[in-house]
Length: 550
Ligand code: ATP
Ligand code: MG
Image (cartoon, rainbow, N blue to C red):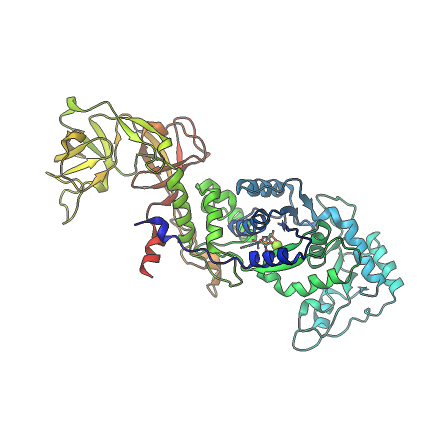
């Protein structure tokens, strides 16, 4: 089977079509400036990787720039440790923001001025309704809402109150600023939304300088405008906020640029959850071993699992950019991981469930054999593997009473052993099998090839065998159940493998293919002489098979 032919065809990226048209008409003076704006309130996940590939990828493709912006307008939830991990994750994915690293909080002064400008223009007012009263006033479509009794407060009074809010003269929740838009709008977000609120909270970046903070809907278009963003791309849930985004931009004078928002479908992956809130819950309840547990879809988790940036980028390109919500098959992600690792992972031999082989003609066996490091990449070279008269093979590779078409070892049958000739099984004796060894030149007619390690040279390694984190494809969608009920009790099995001695000292995160078993990588828990491996992905390619069937 030719893997290349089975690769799914990348769908068209509608955002690129928009950017190309804008470049053609000279809409933003021929510039493309995008941004990735995470809220630093948790670790990034593979869904964010999709957004990162879109934001940075679009800028790269059209010779523009992409800003990395910490959207830290909410002072209560953010932590500094997240900022560093976000930067590291974006870099690891292979992207660079150059000098364009920003904090939304850098613009608080300008945002305050913009709010004051709207008040002065009679386009915003200070409202004293409580949150509950407001919900009542706002109503719900198709019925129009009721106007706040403060809607027509004189401009000077609103301005004075806004200044008092800033000066700390009012309690949290007692006053807020609302944009004066349309209480009868069919879009609830246009029914005089809150744009500034009082929060007596210390901010990680601005400390106690502010006790009034802009809401996301007000801040986001302004951040984009101040940074000169041309194409502001986000997920579909923001589509209904776009009229408010445009209203903010259209009702302020002297903004340095006129950004536009575009929405695309978020990435949802099967058999996992994809939200910072859930991750925090899984970690806090110790249902996984930390935010970078290789079962987690966090960038830290998939990196530790052995997924490569190239594979993730290729995956994001393959799923394409559309406006249709869907659940992406994890098999496609695994396909992209295998395709990349096939090129880069060094081949090694490891036996997971050992069966001892004793070679009767011990005096004839060589002390070492030559092995190819990667048949896909000649420059990876070769290595010597010690050989001896006692080997381990997988216990599955021997059957005392074999079924028809079993091409591995059974009494009287022969098999090829990788890089080292042939074994012919003579008999079983206790827990071991007794075999005769023949050199490669013997050219026995056999159908199977098995892997092995030399028993006395092998190194014991901990192997962590991962399976899906959940037992159902969409754990969030099972009505009447908590998603945690569907955690897979076998998502991690730990075993001891016998590995060839070249694996005794491994560099953390190095990639390997254990021949016939799967792709593994060295876990940072590895110690000299005591390697620990994560199974990145099995060798079985369910995606390619599925494509064939369809
Ligand atoms: P979560 O819901 O996981 O907590 P979030 O949406 O709150 O994530 P932000 O930090 O606000 O996270 O997201 C930064 C950017 O990443 C936003 O532009 C958002 O649209 C995008 N994004 C978030 N989740 C996904 C996803 N699953 N697929 C694609 N893009 C996403
Ligand atoms: Mg968010």
